[in-house]
Image (cartoon, rainbow, N blue to C red; front, side, top):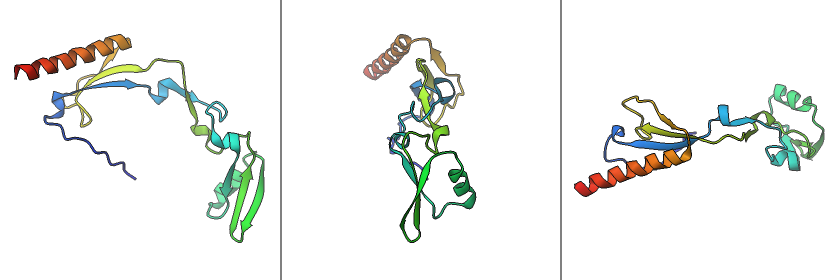
Length: 148
């Protein structure tokens, strides 16, 4: 599945633009979390897994995961494993929570189409400098337009 974005086509090439970004990379600004820490709805409310259609090895893994469940036969060919609330969901390994770390304040040459010059991004040490850089850049654009 691809995501279709509607973007206004820029007038100039990407080399004429700058991108200001606040970034919180998964590798440095997030850590693995339990279901409880992640406010997981499946942990809070419990969850069900439909048996029909699961590959045998997946069904075996779910049934032998150490989680408490009951078998619920809803209709012929419609069976669920109902897992109690308060236990880890089956996607626990995907849960993440932010660590107490400020975002990275970056300025890159180029735009969403890329950085044709291949210049290195500038990392500001604090948000004030990043905002000042952005304001200075906007003022330079305004001055250029007014010269026009």
